[in-house]
Length: 284
Ligand SMILES: C[S@@+](CC[C@H](N)C(=O)[O-])C[C@H]1O[C@@H](n2cnc3c(N)ncnc32)[C@H](O)[C@@H]1O
Picture 1 (cartoon, protein in one colour):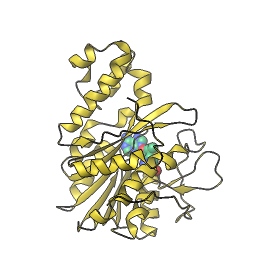
Picture 2: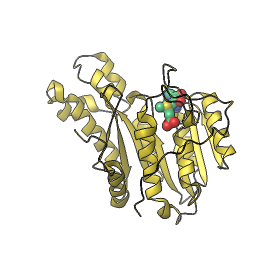
Picture 3: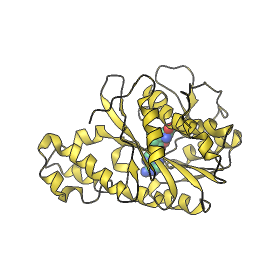
Picture 4: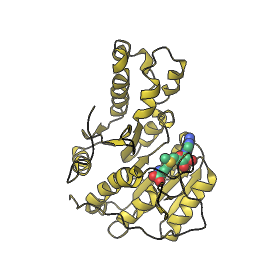
């Protein structure tokens, strides 16, 4: 079931007239987006492509989808965004029967829908905050479908546990972008009222004995552990490999964490994350 490394082909933009994701400062996204985040997601899909064939309904859920096209800083051309790359990965073997994409920005959600439709996908876009669109996405998933959810917010605050609780109603595996950089900036600040901004991500974390008793440098590790426990309580386990993605300056920015209800998908994610040359860091 394990596949070879997927090299990214640069496909022409199916809708070049539409908006492109260029990061929060409009300077282009980091090279790590296609090289690490999208590569991981798509190598996992590639490695599991034959397993997907067994399911009559195969659903990709991406509530922070962006417009489906990115431009990396310094590159003169554009590349597929996460949802489009995911679609292409399974298109020849076991194409997703439903692509559900959302974004708070309606122009982006619609652009993603149009790009996917142009490539032949059956797609529904729902514009709005993920916390509101995910319940609507869950409602349209056919009974008995196998789902892959890509939860890729810009920051940790947007990673509301309510989103994962809603997705947990499905037969779903989750690839989650967990911003460690946000935690670094905020959670260590013991008396900072801004800490409350993470209450939706891990409700109750500030009252947890493990957090309260943690020494200042350990608060963020205690938070991270508590958050994983909350997701595990929903019936998931996570892969031991939680690759830490670094920016161009070598600073860690987020982890890609994979949750599944069974051991095999987690092991496959582990194989993919370790990669042939162990290009990721796994430090806690
Ligand atoms: C990191 S980008 C997504 C990139 C995309 N997943 C990809 O891999 O190509 C995050 C997206 O989330 C959108 N966004 C911001 N806040 C949101 C919210 N509360 N709910 C849904 N989308 C949101 C932004 O407009 C942006 O397009």
